[in-house]
Amino acid sequence: MIVSFLRHRRPGRRCAALAAGSALALLLLAVPAPAWAQEEEEDFSFRQDEELYQLDEAVTMIASSLNRIADRVSILAINSLQFGKDFDRDFRHKARVIFLAQLFDANPAIKLVQCQECQRLQTKIVRGVLKLRKGIPSGEERIALAKELGVHGYIDIGVFRDDRQLTVYLQVIEAETGAIILVEELVGRRAPQRDSLVFSFGEMLFPIDGADHNALVFAVREAIQISERFSFGIELAFFIDNNENNPDAVVELDTGAVVAPTIGYDFWQFSSGDSRITAYLGLGKLISPQLNYGNLAKLGILFIVRDQLEVLLGFNWFQETTLDNGEVLEGASYELRFGYRF
Image 1 (cartoon, rainbow, N blue to C red):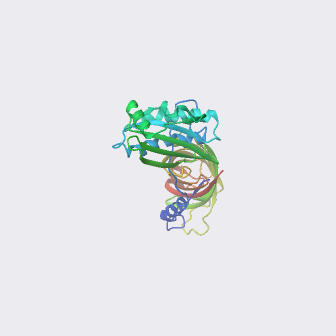
Image 2 (tube, helix red, strand yellow):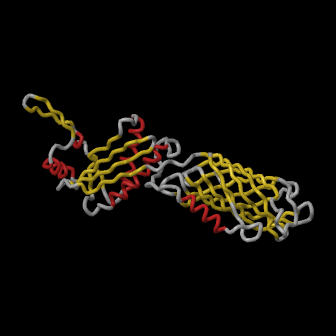
């Protein structure tokens, strides 16, 4: 999905504030939820598994939560790390790698200790009945075990899923008093699309002999996310003359096209995960005999809402090119487009 616009007061320009306002209004539709994201050291990546993508950034969020209580409990024993019944063994294994390997590094203020005794199965015969119990049975044993391990408290982590949406629950208990000093519910951020096909329409200005010449643009773009923030795209945009009411028109444009590969960078990612603001940069080629197959440089901003709607506010710089009627195409102009991502 892509879209774009531009112009100001002349027939060839609309106020950029209109574009920015429209984009911001669309972005408000994205309901935020806590953020998540980082990359694993194994042979899987955040792009290959959306659930691991959501889980991976939980490490950073958990570390941030634990830092708030670091002055009270600076060493914690991992009492439990539990998963919902619908998670398979492979996911549980990878999730443990993420938690146990990365959480140690991501949390400098608090040290974590693995606690094998915390989940030890205990047996006891009461009135001839065998009873099984898992975990720390009493407050006295909790305090004694904490002293043995050299910890100040215990941490419990639970991971659950509801229709591909992960939620991580975090609880910290102070060893000496048994008081619950931290409870957090962290909702996973959905992974952005790895690739998308974007159809868009809008306006594009051509600076011909010092006058802005207006054209309608219909474009299709293939975009691929190549890292956490970088993306690559290639676009084919068709333009047609739209200058009937422009008193400064100096030429009637023939229908043509622009081919342009671009590199994008997500400089602002919203906590919902599927909405972001992307800056892009690229080079384009005019497929038009009338415009002498000129070249242009492109840069601008994409406002992406829920991985569906897209607004493009772009700036184009045209290399000097002489048209077939002797007019000169040269200089900077704007474009504005709206689009939809599939």
